Image (cartoon, rainbow, N blue to C red; front, side, top):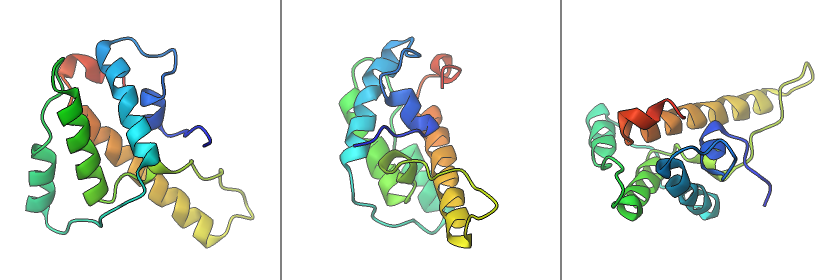
Length: 130
């Protein structure tokens, strides 16, 4: 499998940027995300989205397995795990098709939203490292 180049994946890929226990523990999240191929579909209402995000516990030193499972379920159910499951599409060129532009927009949105959800579920002191 090729290395995933999303910002979320870069955080979790075991790169030398890891500076804390969170980053070390979160590397397992990328492995799980890379092997996951089931997206359950997006949720519709704002209250459902809020409930999904609020169901993710804040990561601490003892709940990584539970936290990771919740992150993957929420991102999958919200159809926001594309950036963790697939390679970043090639950069746009003047010859890029409408479909290629759409693919990049979908991937960028997935990457941005995944990072926001992950940041919300970690202690504030670690958010600056992402």
